[in-house]
Image (tube, rainbow, N blue to C red; front, side, top):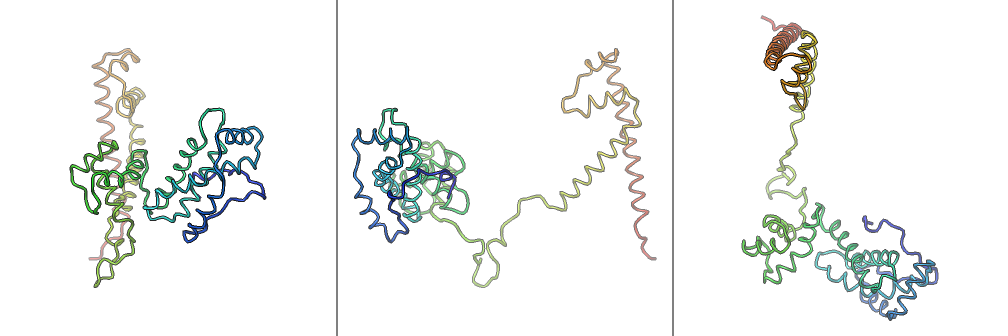
Amino acid sequence: MNAMTSFKPVALSSRSRMPVLASDAGLSGYLDEIKKFPMLDPDEEYMLAKRFYEHEDTEAAHKLVTSHLRLVAKIAMGYRYYGLPVSDLISEGNVGLMRAVKKFEPDRGFRLATYAMWWIKAAINEYVLNSWSLVKVGTVAAQKKLFFNLRKLKSKLGLYEDGDLPPEAAATIAKRLDVTTEEVQSMNRRLSKGDASLNQPVGEESDAQRQDLLVDDRPDQEAALGERQERTIGMKLLRDAMNVLTPRERTVIEQRRLSDDPRTLEDIGADFGISRERVRQIENKAFDKLQKAVVAASAAIEAQTHKSLPQARA
């Protein structure tokens, strides 16, 4: 179950069973079965919705749900071109319908079908996005809109073949759906080709697989470890070197060179009762002392490291 179905469904009594579509093979029988449930006129629908809303009457909920199963099937059939089992699409749509019935407020003044249509489509959309591709297709509203409307807009433009779209067509679709032409072309390629296994052989005479040719864009682990060690050593050298500074020099360096929001020379001078130029002189002198202390400490570490290494035999 996806995120749309993670809720407690409308409870139905043991006498009130919904028809279940186990697989696409039984689709015809399922459609015949749901046609047996009568449609509701506005007054009857209102009274049933009122009974469930105020008293959680499960029999009323059952009649509301079953009378709209044909609506779910009709909506689900519109998604059959994504290559997913129609039985699953209908099942997800039924979950959306039950959620709509549970949240429906009859005194709002509109029919249940109008309200339920949004929940049904939302449930099916989420299922398609999560199931259609191993790689997540749409992560923002615009991408999802592109995914579900691209085929329809291509048909209106008379484009039925796979391959990249003509630039003019891509631009027209991009403007209509408020996305870039690059996003339109990328989505069109994904919808045309589908997923490919990373274990697929590259060639007939080679044992290499597609995954062997993928480039890892992550930083090299050895280089990253070396950088972390250098930063650690550098911070230690700096902390030790700060000990050569006087309290005033340390304050000036910390507030001028080591702060994310450095203070001005005027502000620091006001704290110490000295001129801006004097603060600048203190800063330069302190920085020079720091550099010399760090260089000396680095040389001492390098000499110690060299001394500890095994000497090569003559």
